[in-house]
Length: 152
Image (cartoon, rainbow, N blue to C red; front, side, top):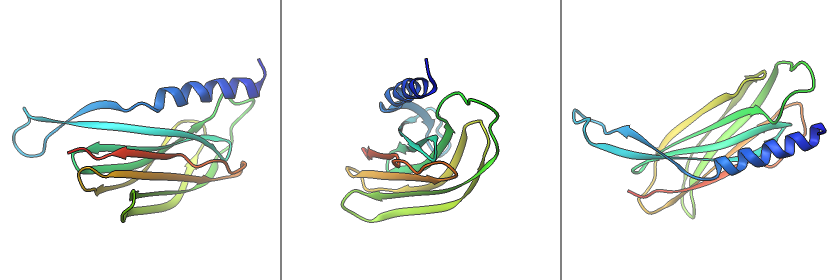
């Protein structure tokens, strides 16, 4: 199997696994840890700068945590050199206000890196759209965009 085919097969598998919300549980704030609030994590995948990139959102009640992930898109053909990637995470309420954005540089080698974003509060019943852009030495690609409902 050639390199392009391996990358395409790996990307399709990763995309299929990451498009469905994954429920997790987080303890509720306060002294009562017996009560739990469900956290829903959703990530969307895209290829950018020759890398696999993910826009992610964790939703707990009306609280939304926005972050990104960067990893290799497939097995490397040779040694992987260090790169400095320029990243931007942004989020907004669909049809509403911006929830914020954060930009910076991220060193990347060959292991998955999480790019920390920010936490915001969104109105119950709204939909939050988060976008993650990565620029590096490879060709610029499609930015991953994730949309998540805020159900309180």
